[in-house]
Length: 421
Image (tube, rainbow, N blue to C red; front, side, top):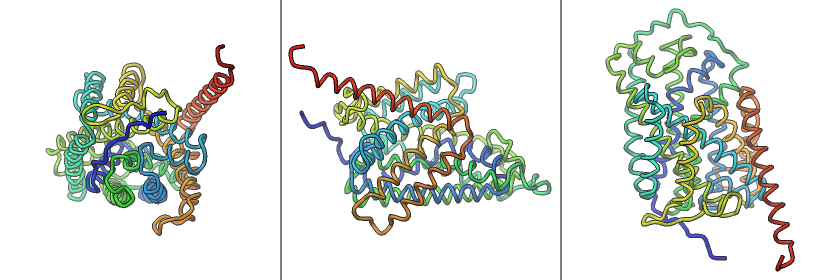
């Protein structure tokens, strides 16, 4: 059988870090603090810390595995290599389904900020435009990601300054909040949604220069930057808005509107739009590469594994992902997929930690005990999420596994037939 076409290594450490950070500083940071605060109350910062600790365990496991297997597909490939085909499939299927829904959520959030009355058409246009950019090659994707990341960071810095300057109308009324200690774990599960972007660096392993050095550095640098930003924002927002944070639909925008810098609110809206675009761009890229890897192994139609064009991209997979996202935008309300996506990604990283645990040798930054801690953390956060997304994603995973089992049975029967029949 002919060898599959390979992608080209064009990304350096800075580009890889920017793509990971751009994925994490997506639309989630503009919305996730409110539902997390509703669950954890004044303990919101502890939820951020807990989500960050689990994310760190997952990041070092992903870094060690990506250095060992520098190819497209991320944990789908690692699971197959280290644990077997079925764990790899569960990881890949969870990632593709959860993140495809997240693509639709990011696109619709962008449409809602830019043109509330025409959110769906604008969202579809964004998906088409960003898919076109991806088809121009990974270097174009990296260039746009850097631009969007600068806009997002500038808007987040502005929010932080506004929260510090005040005034703080909620300071006198600040109480224990609507949540408490029992809500820290589910809040951490929701906050994990905002940390999940570093997976995109690993899924691009086939396009990174010197992957054994670049990927670990990029993953850890992106995670450290995102953790610092999230923790500072959680502390500042809670101090500035108090109990109002839990009920805020647009917490970062509300923080600016309640400050002396209310006139700068449009900057936050621009930042949210840029964040949505940056996250969507990276999501389409990552889902496309995982789809490519699964198609190469026959777990998805092999047509999706075609690589070509002047810029050597998995164009069939990219177009297929875009088509599914547009279908979701036209037929489904996807604004409730934060928990759904969190569950799928936590399953994905549970497989990553289990895979890293079985490596013959471990780098100093990823000891085996940390892999075990990461696996347990993923399981705990996944099964303390609200029941609706948990049960929905469990059903999607079960449907995918049942479909793969049927395909394997069909292939076995086909291969077992005598020739000529």
